[in-house]
Length: 432
Image (cartoon, rainbow, N blue to C red):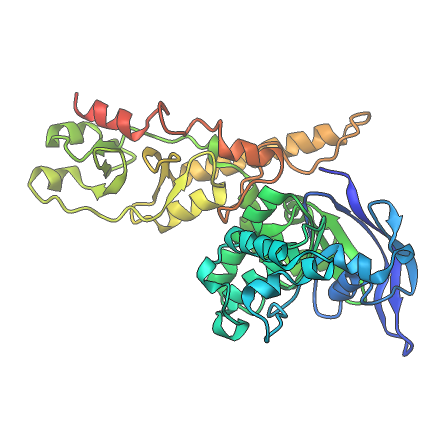
């Protein structure tokens, strides 16, 4: 984890009528990470965000930006040093897309040509086609408008990005795409992002650190998302997380520990005899792949031998070692045969896993986490038990957190080119 770029020290916001929006809040926002503020309506999420760029002034306490008290900085200069993204994008309706994005650079005195060149670069970065540059906001979809809003916030390359429920006004499909885009951009740019949402799933998906706030602006818990799910601080946090937090927690266990079985995998050109040899007592079906090892479907060898070459859909696949145990379990549950299909980065089959084997891997992952937590809590270690290395795989297909993300991207043993039980190996064995 990187050092704190924003430090909130004992900050409160009280209004003249006695309303307390934020009550003695203290937390640190690390550089190059996403910190999420989440909680019910009236918990002070947006108020906290607006106190950081001084749209709202705190009643007490102080906020430091890179070690300097923000109260000692000119307010306009402070705001221009931060990107700010809000619901419905907040675009200027009389300006084109490219001029909306170039707003802050122009305020900072950039030449128009330079500002527009930067805007064009950012359009590409956030996934907007260059043909949209001269359109006006009303000519864009909701998702496209939010992308423009993110590009505008990044235009002057600020170290801090404040995001106030930026994706709440779009449909779930668009929202997921925007979340994935944000994670990709963050991986490339490494900003300090403070993100406000009321959606706990979004908080867990995006956050490196999650702050759960109570009504009245009190901090209930501040922790990495896997720790939040596994060890809620009190009944309020547990209730806010919901009854399925155990399933969500599987998002932070990598599938690399799964014992995949390559035996029931055969190439489409295998003979009935070769296919019959692949049947085991545990798996009455075989998974048929094409000549490149890509899955085609499940087959019953007896019917295949009789000429009934009908395939049962294999359902969804998971990338072995990169996707989480939550994804693997979902694939097994949705599979018509009850077996999940694990593939490598190229989509070639590595092997299959039953619901029982996924359950075994889940138990092993929990046991490993418990051991690491005990070791971290032992006197003299000075470490924090926030989850085992290599458990950062996100069940939604997003990046892993920190070192765990690297474990997801490689070293899982399920990569193309020589993975035990890969489709190429299965096809070769079937031909013998």
